[in-house]
Length: 211
Image: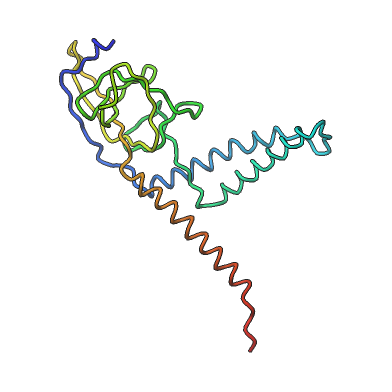
């Protein structure tokens, strides 16, 4: 298959819009809410009924751990500063999307290098899907299987003509340029919330001024 894919002509077409930090934060919040709406009922369904008598200490500890897990998840849902990175399914790439690359089951997908295209582009496959990864190609080789960490964005399309003169267009993903700004924004949200909570606590402790 490597011989069949050999690229002769290629052209990158950048996307007209890239995901902004505000847009991504909104997606993070929506995905957090959706995941909780799916997971909390599942976890609750595994708890023993009221009045259940534990058969061992380990049995009781497992149940308490599950109760804490549910409570932590509910707290995260209610906390606007808890915004873990949203996922981007490798099976549903689209222009303008961004996220941590994943596959069904929320696993980090294994990608295979089909061909190295110059110094900064890899033509890759995931199952029967074909797309390009814009990154330094120094450490890669044809046929290599690898995974991508961090937040990636669909930055455009790559059109090429292969060795049998067939014209193909694939999505291009690259490391999201605003990833650092996203992390800084989340940390600032947390810091501001902590400051506000501390000020509120201090105000409660402050003695009332007598008139």
